[in-house]
Length: 102
Image (cartoon, rainbow, N blue to C red):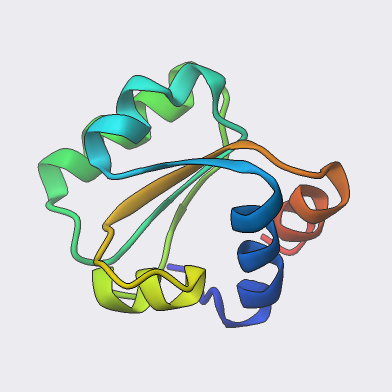
């Protein structure tokens, strides 16, 4: 599990300037277009295995974080809970910053 604390500013910037898919179903269906998928600690093990397998098939980086769904939404500056989100479009420098520290 990864802490998203060092990436909060970068993730908020990606949220403002890029394109994200929020939620398990949206992230799963758009996984072939994703650059990165991030899951909270509250995702069920069945769903976690399903989305992780889909990411492996499409060679997409996958992160499970220590944050629960409330904490994950706070990292992004959202007012509602999310368990999973995927980054579909983002500035390369922002994305590389996150991926380089994993």
